[in-house]
Length: 327
Ligand code: KIV
Image (cartoon, rainbow, N blue to C red; front, side, top):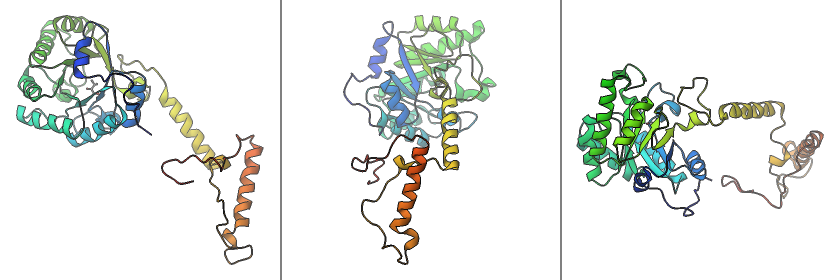
């Protein structure tokens, strides 16, 4: 069901993204499962970020701090199963790299080895140069992330735009330069003024991928559920919802619930029928479930279906197997 279309176009790698600097903008979106990974890949997105934002949009927490490395490995594996061409980046969760470069390397290795990530992303600048360098020297591509770094939500006093004063802008620029100097192949710029992201993008030779950082970056990333309009009423200024899937999902589920209540789902076309007699003859002690009882149910379903102008009957000679259920 979630099998990607393998081998139709060229695999996007860390080197591909690096080579896109100044040539072609990078499109990246978060993905947390195989289905959305497959759909994003089919849509032609370059890179899938298995972001620790999953702590908020999948797990329902108010920030990303409680996400574990096990969570990240689990979701990265799912995304890898759903994609073949897109570049898959696994986010390093809070406290999986902060303690030391050795801890960072061990955990980055697990994301690659167990999760199948093709690169890892970590938040922070100057203070994580050693950690980034250690991971890169082990052969794992690192994507940096500076500006608004959600894992520092408490230190920042909330999810606030960073780099708004000349001093603060200087600090973010220094962070970005440190990340590049440590060997990162790309960097996320989150929640910074476009005047700052423009300068950073011009200074660096690696692609900058913005979220809430304006159009001056070398690429953009959005959280999948925000982009699809599934995140509820609150929509931050930097988000553009390209669909209203939240509404569509509610409408579809409402229709389903109503049809279950009024008995119109499942209709005969969604129903399997036995091809041979399953129970004893009429009048036997199993009469309650005899063929005649089953036939009566079937006739009633057909009548209802015709009454509603239904879409016809299931073709018993051409059954479609679903989820491994024999029909
Ligand atoms: O976790 C995440 O989804 C991210 C993006 C918002 C860049 O880090």
